[in-house]
Image 1 (cartoon, rainbow, N blue to C red):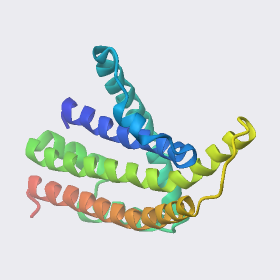
Image 2: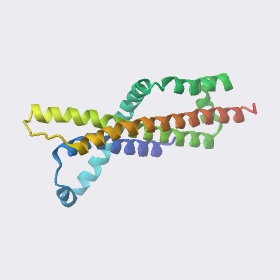
Image 3: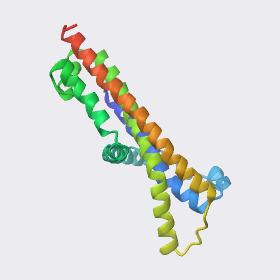
Image 4: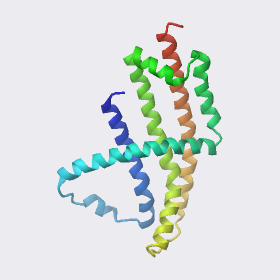
Length: 201
C-alpha cells in the first residue's frame, strides 16, 4: 500500500474514533446543534493544519486499540476460532504462514498487492466501526458517571439513549460477522494470488 492510501486510512479511522469520543457526550448533554452549525471558525489555516494532524494521530492510535478490541470482541462472541480457521487455511493451501505469502505477493505483483491492500483497508475501517458501536454504550455509561460524580450534573434517564446503546451492541455483533467474511475473503485472496504467482495452479 502506498503512503497516500495509508494516510487516508488513518484519517478515516481517526474520524470514526473521534465520533466514539464525541457521541457519548452529545447523548448526555444534548448541546444546541444550531450552535454547532453556526460556529464561526477563526484562523482557518491553523485549524486546517491542526485537525488533520490530530485526526491522523488519533487514527493511528485508534487502529491499534481496534486491533486489541477486535481480539476481545471475537473471544466474547465465541468467533475467535472461526478467524483462526481462515488463517490456518492458508497454511493448508500454500504450506506457508500468511505473512510469508503476503511478502511473496508484494515482491511478485504490484497489482496483487494493491488488491490485498484494498481488502486490508476495508478490514481496518469495518473494525473501527465495530469498535465505535461496541464502545459507545461503555463510554456513554463512563461519561455519565464522571459528569454525575465529578461535575455534579443532573443526568436524567433516557429511553432513547438506552435503545441506542442496545441497538449499538446488537449491530456490533452483526458487523463483527461481516468483518469475519472480509477476513475470509482476504485470506482466500492471499492463497489464490500466491498459488497463481508461484505457478502452482
